[in-house]
Amino acid sequence: MAKENQFVNQIADIETDFPRWYTDVVTRTKLVDYGPVKGTMVIRPYGYAIWENIQKELDARFKATGHENAYFPLLIPYSFMTREAEHVEGFAPEVAVVTVGGGETLAEPLVIRPTSETVIGEMYSKWLQSYRDLPILINQWANVVRWEKTTRPFLRTSEFLWQEGHTAHATEEEAMEETMKMLGVYKEFAETCLAIPVFTGRKTEKEKFAGAVATFGMEAMMHDGKSLQAGTSHYLGQNFSKAFDIRFLDKDGTHKYAYTTSWGVSTRLIGALIMAHGDSRGLVLPPVVAPVQAIVIPIAAKKEGVLEAAATLKAKLRAAGVRADCDASDNSPGWKFNEWEMKGVPVRIELGPRDIEAGKMVLVRRDTHEKTEASLENAAEAVQALLAEVQQNLLRRAKKRKEERIVTAESAEELLRGVEGGNFVKAGWCGCRECEDKIKEQTAASARVIVEGETAGKCCCCGREAKHVVLFARAY
RNA sequence: UGAGGUGUAGCGCAGUUUGGUAGCGCGCUUGGUUAGGGACCAAGAGGUCGUGGGUUCAAGUCCCGUCACCUCAACCA
Image (cartoon, rainbow, N blue to C red; front, side):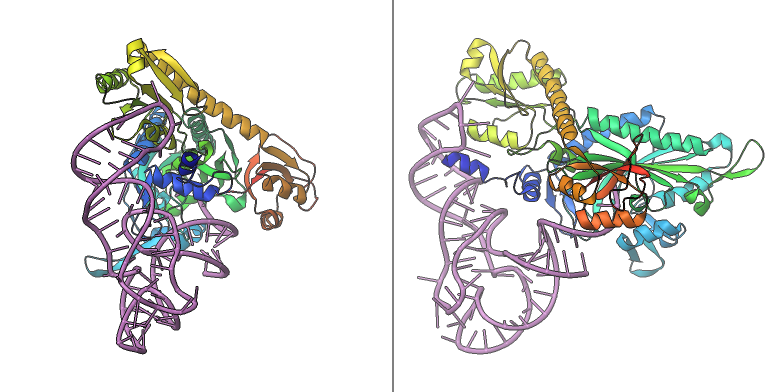
């Protein structure tokens, strides 16, 4: 009992104090540390390794859909921001501005990019001349800065890492197709790699990206029933091409403005992983993105042959492509069990004198804590099979919860009851901004996405005829 | 930007009410014994008490200012 308490004291209780649980877990597992400047974070090796795995998976998908990587400058002339009216209005309050360079006040202040539509638009206008130059399909991996008032590691920080795709097309249809295609790429990635089932759909006017014609979002359900916007894909129409003069000479001999898109996901995905799968013992990482997929814990490590056998096993697993490690530190086995569980490693392998003699190992999976034995001879196969199963199970589990936690509401009261119970709520909406604001005020829930292909009778707020079915939730 | 809270050793905290030698737990170092769910013994190292000023013989403690961080709300990926 005393020992149990000692463990529990490491991190706050996930059910009763989720925000605290989150910050405890991200710092104690060494994913992240706070930076010296307000709102900044240091992504430590264990956290960055997750990001690298996310990047690897996403980058492959971007390349497979015809995109190339490039890099645009961090500093943007302030005047660029003001060329698109909605854009500047949306971003001006949270932009960081450089006014001095080389000890001298700059003639024109520079913005540290909060997003890159403007610089990239400027460059596209230079590069684009003929319809033959289209489409332009470029992605950038970069950091951006948004001066946020309150911050939380991975979820909202002043500086964060992301990927922003920026494309230009000859027609509206093609640009819209691109917008939806990339939303689909995100969705597939979230489910197969992060084991997070998501809701996708169009955002309301209130929630859309500043400067977009339409924004489509990917929403994920967190442990506490709140929603996290995990990615967005924007159809920008000709808003930016008109502001930045992105024109081309078409087949018919006339100049036309291009149709552009942009889409991005960020290090917030790491926060999504943590909050979607974590449990009372800490992180639960899906094998596809886990920095360490299997951790070998030698038992009675000082007994002859144990460490050697553990090292051999690790090497064997690595040779088979498993991200394996061995904890040969002086800590007790029990300490290691808890530590690596907190760090979310999908599979633990216990290897002691008894096992070695029997030619076996003990496998313990992080998601269910189920213990099994497997032969050392086919170690790699057994571990790979278990990793695949853990990945499947995490998705299955998350899907089940997602389905169980969707309710419908006919009135604002029902909506409130729904979100208070930690649910996502489908409800009819008349389409007006007043109702949307009112719902938010009364329930603290916002319109996450407009649900496609469903019809509702009445608006849950004003009772007029509903234009859309909307998925409402409290959000991060 | 509004409301609340916290700053004392690497981490978590006590000490502040009533001013008088800087404490506890974990972690860290060294040596030894241990080892299948956060082991044990012994000896150590480590602190301008967030910061600036003031009151006082004397300030972690009282007064004034200031900064940072956390939680909740509003805005965003």
